[in-house]
Length: 264
Image (cartoon, rainbow, N blue to C red):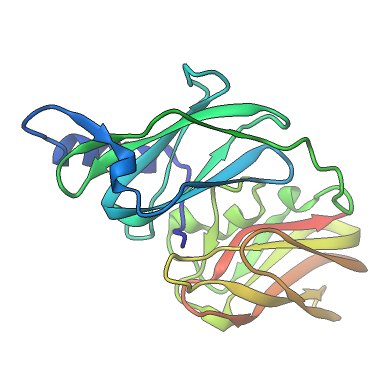
C-alpha cells in the first residue's frame, strides 16, 4: 500500500513542523519506531541503482522521514513522504534519490506520531544494484515540454513532473481517472524506439493507470500498452515530435504518472 509523495523541501519542513508541534512526550523519550510498524519495511531499489523506494505501514498515523548515507553516520540525504492532503498518515512510501549504483546504504526511519511521541528506528541497510544499461536507448523526454494536460491536482503535482527524470516527483490529474492525458513536445522529430510509463498510485488502490495509448503528431495511435506501478517499457518504432499519452483502463481517481520516458 502506497502513498503519493514529493521530494520538495517544503514537504520536508512540513514533516518536521508536525514533529515539533505535536510531539511533546512528558518523559522526553524517543521510542523505537519498530513498535509502531504494522509490517516489514520494504526497500525496492530502481534497476538503474540511482534511487530506491521505501514502503512501510504504521499502526498509527505518523509524519515520517528517512535519513540515509553510505556510512553508519548517514549524512548523504533525507527524504520525506506525504499524501495528497499532507500531514500524518499510516501508509508510507518514500523515494530516496541521489544514490550510487552497486553501493550499500545505511538508513533510519524517524518521525512523530499522532500520539504525540517521537519515534526512531534502528540503523538498517540496503544495497543498490549495478547500473542497468538495458534501456532501448537514450531518454529524450527529459528535454521535452508539456504542451497539454487533462488537469493537474496542484502545483506540487504539475504535468512537467512526469518528464523531469526525478522519481521523487509526479504528475497527478485532478480526479480524471480513465480520461487523464498528457501531451509532450520533443522539440523536433525524433526516431522513437521505445516508450516507458510509470503510473502513480494511491494507498487505497486508486490512481493506477493499467493501460495507455500513444498518439503521434495527431495521427497514428499505438497501444493500448500495459502500465502500472513501476516503469513499464514497450517497443515502439515511429518518428514524431508531439506525443500524447492517454489513460485507457485505470483504477480511477487522481491518475497520472511518476515518469514518462521516450527512447531514441
